[in-house]
Length: 320
Length: 314
Image (cartoon, rainbow over all chains, first blue to last red; front, side, top):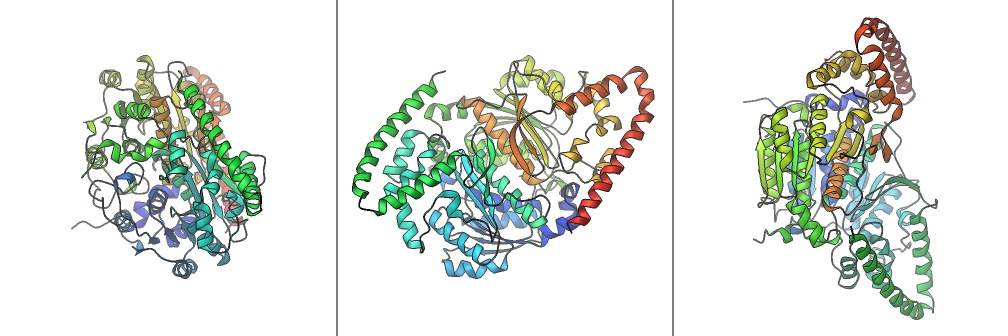
């Protein structure tokens, strides 16, 4: 019978960076993760390896083939199993003293709001942007810091939303609609999905794939290094909040990650995302007016030009 | 079950064309290491769709690896890292081909291994040995990716025959393996790693014990995995040619809880070079008393500063 090593031994190397007090704060913290897919699962494992001992995991989905290219606990022998359950097993094998609560079902917003006051950091990592936006709002209302990670292709935004920070809508330019259903319907409509055109130049989406994303609702594309990069950076931000070492990059500041650069941007600062946010906000207003049919017609023309430009860009890029 | 390549890596095709993905699939990656970051990198690359691996390294999982190494679990402590990783890669992509070696290759074997592969990743704790790998890769004109996390500091960069050498960017003297090993393990050289404290946010007490050889390198999961993800991205850049890699002296630089695209620091490089020229050889060795006094004062100062800042942020 071998005796399992204790916390101090397992996380020994952490003490070269964190003091006993800081590591103790990390150990006793509790993190709520909603969605244990690409970013949610990786953040859970990285935080467990960093010494966080208390988790609440929410995920209704099971591992499938298309998860293999990036999700940390997706293996041929875990295919078909609930993601949160598999992540819990991993966490327990990392830190046997960990406490992991699992909800292997789809929780509505009321149930999640009941969980939020029990934790130190909330991480909404669901695929559904509208769902996450509402969770962010709830976290801010209840005074709990939240981690924001939005990955797409090789691009990502990462930051912490403190209770008094500017909200997520200001970072991404999402209209401030009241209910989840309204927001969800809006984001699914084709004319609003056009606001994601930066996926092509900045997130390195192939133009044909982007076209099928808009026209046929294909799933967003993700690659493992970018997903793991923003997950580890996000986990580092959570550790900053929990330990008190280093100042977190909190809204209005946020990380902007692309394949060639990682920068800290500021809401309303001189960067392309500000342009995008304003464009989304203005277009949203304009689409509410009587101009809407004309705009939709103009958008179709713009769309054709954009596709042509995308093809041209790819052909030029593929030349050696 | 449909475990074909396309089904498993379907989501990659939104970024990579069929040609790109085919290049990733047929590329041969050599990872030499026992530091833990090599294993994480191997898994990450297999999730990207790389199918051919040569893994070389020694070592078994220990309890202290738990805080950062991807294959370390309570039920794998004591198991061989390379064996376990080869099995795990096959659980991601059953068609992958992994050639594994359970010892670090000798200088002669190194050339032979590097010749077979398209990208080399040295992931060893021993800096003198990794310098050797970089030299061999340069000689055989293969790109080599540096992934060096330590504490909360990290560098990631790509070295090719056209870029400066690794000795150049870090200010390490150009010696043979044994000579280098002696230098790297000397207390004087460890002193020249004072940037572990200033940039890497190591605790001074830990560094002091490390300096005395009583403690290992400080490493944390978030920084190591960030470094590994960036290194994987660089490997994909090299293989596919889709983006321009971060060629030395450009690099990804992680420090103080931040990460950015940067250059290797000139100050520390010249500091080390100058230090080596003056104190490293001949008469300089007799001056070590002087350097010990200097570093003693320096560390006392930093220790004082760290204690002060701790009491300010309770």
